[in-house]
Length: 182
Image (tube, rainbow, N blue to C red; front, side, top):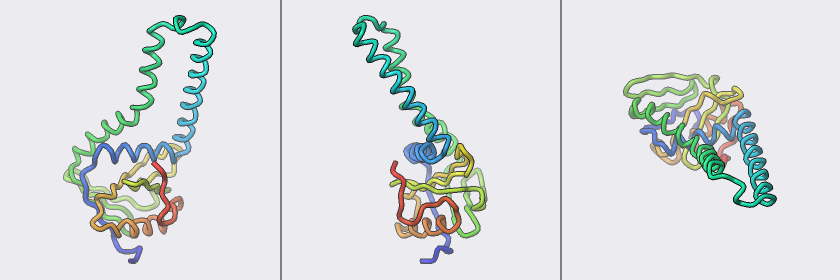
């Protein structure tokens, strides 16, 4: 099939797809990777300090307030992306069903409340997971994100056509069939 043939997707966004898109954004933007490393370094340091304190002073030296703070901090780090996805889901659901057409000229999104046309030059790269394609802007944060759920494709072969379109138009698109893990 030709890469110049339009690909169409029709879907209502789900929380899981938004969460997957945010995870890929964090992993594939320079600032996201930096933040991820800093958080893990801080977590490792905090863990080391706690273990050292426990080994030298014993369990009784740490108050219940410190344990609660540590538990809350860990939970917030884990669920932060989930909470962001939940917030974005409200907006996406407000827009209603998405009908997206992707062709050589760009991406056209039509919803019940919004119509948008974006040229390929807006996006710098695309990453793919098992569930979604994610287009990212080339800025350091990858702030412009478009999540395209694979379940919205009319035909499973459309995924190959979509990969061909993106590979030919985006400078940072991976070659067809290559996927990001996530």
